[in-house]
Amino acid sequence: MAQTLTNHPSLALYRRFSTLNHLVLLHLQDEISELESILAELDTAEYLSNAGLGLRSRRAGSGGGARRIQVMGAVAWKLREYSESHYTPFRNKTR
Image (tube, rainbow, N blue to C red; front, side):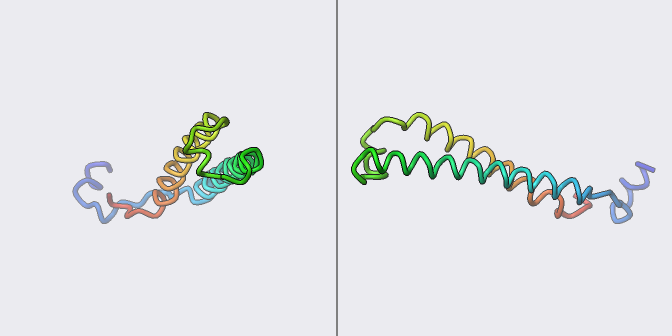
């Protein structure tokens, strides 16, 4: 069968596991939303502790930056994972 599919890729038909893919996407969305909330809390705390300077104080090296950098790294990782997962189920089946 594998040889036939190799010789005739247009005959290939594979399961997409659509339900599982949707569950994974929803799970990743939830994780990203949690990280988004943590960032909002960090921004609010920084805003209140720096007399409203916001991002300018972060650039100046104020405290709390290490936690924000850690969360931003997690956000970047999860967004990359989400983007890859989001498009994988919908790619051409013969690739």
